[in-house]
Image 1: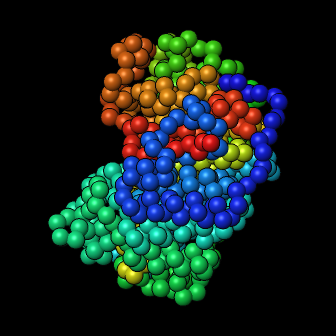
Image 2 (image 1 turned 30 degrees about the vertical axis):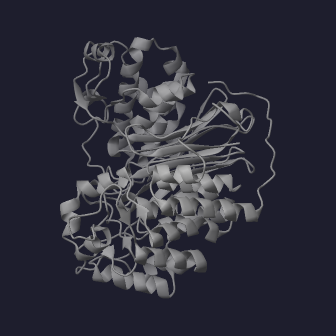
Image 3 (image 1 turned 180 degrees about the vertical axis):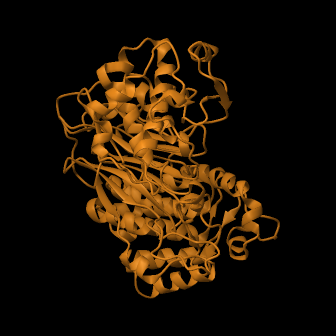
Amino acid sequence: MRFNKILNLMGTDQSSEGRGRRQIAAVLCALLLGGCAAAGDALGLGEPQPAGVAGTFLGGVAADEPRAALVGHEILRAGGHAADAATAIYFALAVTKPSSASLGGGGVCVVEDIETETTRALHFLAVAPGTVPPTAARPSAVPGNVRGFSALHAKYGRLRWSQVVAPAANMARFGVQVSRAFARDLAKVEKALLMEPETRRVFGRKDGRGLVGEGDVLVQGDLAATLSLVSSQGPGSFYQGPMARRLVAAVERAGGSLGVEDLRAYAPVWRDTIKVTFGDGTMHLAPPPAAAGAVAAEMWAMLVQDDRYENVADGERPHLVVETALRAFADRARWLRGDGTSTVAPEKLVSEARITSLMASYRRDRHVPAAELDPAPVARPENPAATSFVVVDRHGSAVACALTLNNLFGTGRVAKGTGILMAALPGRGGRGPISLGPMVVMSEKDNQFYAAAAASGGVAAPTALLNVMAPILFGGRLDDAMSAKRLHHGGVPDLTYYEQGISETVLKSLTERGHQVAPTVALGLVNVAFCSGGLPQEPQTCAVRADPRGFGLAKAVEE
């Protein structure tokens, strides 16, 4: 990886507030007129182009849902900080992909601010309430997203709160076409959602024939009203006062579990990241209870220790990646508590001594059976339902986030009168945040941004992240890394999973080393922003990409 040593800060002139309002209005008009392609045409943007091909890179976004990505893109065009764009993307996702990003859910972000030279993790998970009454037919979690993104915006945002929330409120009010990404989620649990009267009313077709599908216009009037209040009265109104009391009452009627005190007491938490240093770079990952961050951190520490990944022969690399994943998941059985927290201080998970111990059993020429590891990995169900996005602004500040309702569509019920899908209670059946783990790569030596990435896909999320990041951080092309077939080993069962279409050469190298292999369609969804030469130093080397396995969108801001 090329970490440059000369800092060359870009200009800091900001667009006027009037220009910002005009640009935000433009994206709203475009989004309300039709689908993703129509929005791009109305804005004069055309089809998404790779950054670094033409023009000057002024930031970019990548998200699992296209319309939310376009909202964040316009916030960056208006001169917003990465935190402004991330906040706007989130609230848009609450409208366009509420299956994983409803106001009732939670998540985690890794945030890098170029001006203060700080990188922190922000946890705002949907946690269990103080008490769950026995009458709760669908126990629900305490919502964290509104507080979380308000904390992010308050610390780093430059635009007004109402500017970043208004696009979502208008999309809910006037309607937006259902994207393929959201339509796919609806189809997975259509029968269950149709059984719930309020959920069926919100997401059902007007002719009564099932749920809305791709291209249908979805209007969410109750959600629009809720978002408008959050926009005009501020995020605090969601957690206390009349709105909070109405939400609690609606959740109780929907069979959920939420108290006024649960809302009032909820607070997001800023935490230190897990840091893994390599060369001049530092990879920052979210700590537990976003446990996938720790798994990816251990994997990365094993790969870069003694330049292991860089120096290994190409034929051994697939084996190396799989064996590090296996050891990271096996070690997780040692430190992971039932609530997702760690028995080991996060920074000690990647200590030199621990990583050396984990790799002591590594054999270049053969797979070490999972049962022979100490500790051996244990089976653990994991919630695969999440969504992610990344943002980097023109100056090099970045935000990478992963969000979940602890289950696809949470409890499956909408709190009547609010438009909000409530997150499921964490813990049971693998529901929870342990598969979340966004990351940012910086050169702290000269304050340069190099990469931000976030993944979803349950147990495969951290390995998917490293399948992409390892090649590009050692000189590979981003497009090649995104399209390359992925590998994963979670420990139980003792199988190496591979994406269909992987080369016979790779499979042969694995099976000859004793791996039992099994095909699968896809391993995770990854969103990436990457600047091979660093930002703000070499903006022409920057690119943003959404995973081709999904239906998201990456969009660069260019002059």
